[in-house]
Amino acid sequence: MSLQSTSRPLARTCQLAARKQTQQRSLSSQCLRISSQQASQRRQTRRWQSTDAATAATPTNPKISTIVDQISQLTLLETADLVASLKSRLNIPDMSFAAPAAAAGPGAAAAAVEEPEEAAPAVQEKTLFTLKLQSFDAAAKSKIIKEVKSMLGLSLIDSKKFVESAPKMLKDQVPKEETEKIIKTFKDLGAVVVSE
Image (cartoon, rainbow, N blue to C red; front, side):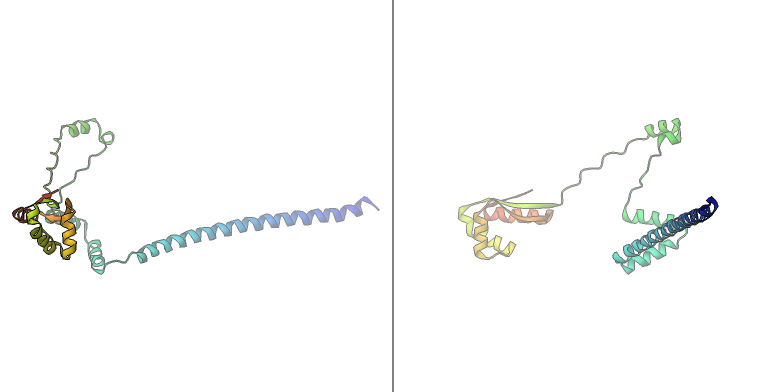
């Protein structure tokens, strides 16, 4: 056999193999391109579905939806007027936000230091109290049991157990005026009620 006769089929096989490799590379690059496009589409679909699910999951009050629609149609000046009106109606204090000193320059830092600090808010007076039956006169036990029965709506037996287990919490979250009345009533009957 001659060298030429054996080299032709070998060359043909090499050409076919090279063509197959080229086709495979082309196919793999097409597959990568398609898969990246599909992944992008899936991400975008998920993003849309997540926002749709979020809006569907939170039921919106129609009254609030109407207000939001109306506010979104306001101009900038009308929005500023709305904010000012809400602040005055709801007694919301103006909040000032300090700008970063480095961005404003050294003069702004000195001006910020010179601003007087606002006084600390006054301690709010307590308006709701917890009442506690501390002690009672043994002679006035029956009157106190009747008062506890009428005040708490307990049965006579439960009221007796309640009074005998003093000191015990009588009432919780009681307004100041009612607290003073209850303390006076029990004091007149011969019991000591304290507010906390």
